[in-house]
Length: 519
Image (cartoon, rainbow, N blue to C red; front, side, top):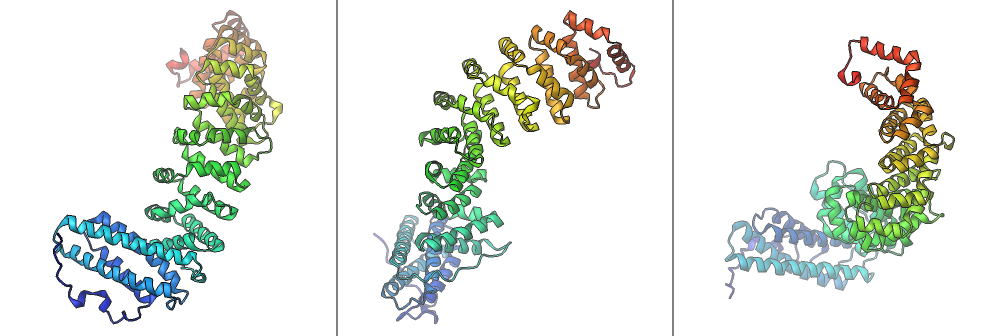
């Protein structure tokens, strides 16, 4: 049985303030009462989690009341009745707060129960206020917009601003919801501290996720932009996923606007880094949706590129990889590897490398589907591929083909040697470096490769690299020559050119002789 509490002294009762007229209290007065109670709650050192919940409810309620105050709606019967009930609850809560500050409560369990009850009351008041807004009684209340605090503003001001946005997002008309989202986007773009405030005010995340299902394109796209910024913070991604963001993102990719699809794909790209949330994406049909985007000839580069990226993130999961293969992903990405758009071409090449790497059955399928031939064609000097694309293609060929003599022979038949030699001679510094590394690896694959490289004219190029400024480059060139002269025909060809021998003798005479080069 609860003990009867002693009456609270009159001077501590906020309703006894001269600013509060209990016969006809105003919205402004109840706003002041709640603000005072919020301030008092920060002084409470016990039951911190429960007071945090109460404070969140108070802030939510206060932002709604401030908007209502802009309507001069004190005369509205529904509001007048709600004001009286709120004041009663505030009075009770103030009493509990002071008892917690003074540690004058009779028992912890009893106080915890009282705090749960008071929190539930504030929740009911907030819902009632929301119903009043929804009914259109306070339709003009949002005409006055709270100004966004400047950079360096305190956290309380930022929370108040976001709370006001929450209210507009919940109960405003479409135009006001859109403006609220625009304001929120501007806030998180200008100051990333707002992202933390959004996460702390949990309900706003759920509101943003719900907007992804809105039939109004502008609301959907604005919510997507905010979520895209939040998803860039690794520590907050789990919060968004916990609020069910994956499924609506996939639905937007399937049915949204062109802009919405692009942003949704970019969000998923962040959520699936390092194969995170792979099963969640798969469970909601995301893999099928992404493959459909990539296989659709009408899809734009801005959408295909992040979609490829997401599939690249997911391909490391064996079961998902097998599903992709069954759905024809290899033929789709071989086609995309011929794209004229750099980002699409690179992503597709990386995908083919990832899906085939270390899997002989997939390698065979890749050869059968023409994937190796396609990669060699990317390296055709006449193809006008960018340096980044050429580097990606070389690395993919190395990772996919160099572990098998038969695949190396296929490369030779497709003219890979000629293309590689061209970039070894004529590529920019970065591309030459990649070409040299690939050529060195190629010289280690088989006798046939060494012979073909000797016949193709690789040795004179390796000799030139012996004079490079980079020690690493000189070592690679020496290793390649060492491997190639193991073939009698190559050794004879090398010795017949006096310049080759002179170059080696000059290197032996320098003060920088290193055992790795001599070897």
